[in-house]
Image (tube, rainbow, N blue to C red; front, top):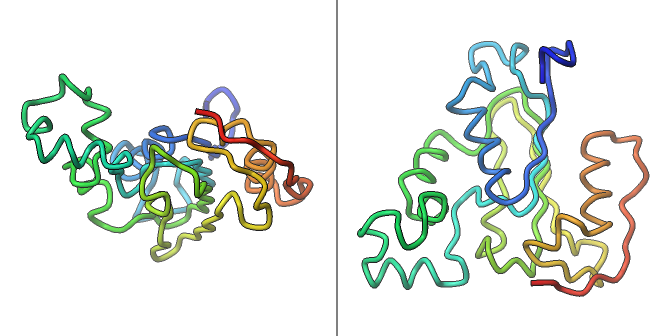
Length: 182
């Protein structure tokens, strides 16, 4: 994308594990230059319902842990499912040096009705040195948006918040009634 656009930096938007993988890219795959943040390949990260601090999947992964299903390998839940568990080696490694990297502006959007990223607040990040984080509950200022994990990606409010995070001159995110969709 950098080569195609001729730009020195890009912005990343990711939902669920896509948001978590944006953090992995910055920390482990060359997206950030910790010694010189002006050389980061990424300027802004916008996440929706990312499993930044793992998930219990409403208790399903905790039950799988108690039944020792997680120890049996990746087959029952798949590698991605196991990696999202709040006790996974992936999540521990991802957050070992803090949530953020210097020089990146993060916007993290979570929904109170998230049934996948649980507890829902585990999506939120804490800014480290040289980074900014704006944690936004989708229902803040809009209690009628009942979007859940999957439906938040097409919530007019969430879309408006993403646009605003990428371009502060974008219109204010609308507040419209949204029923949960599973």
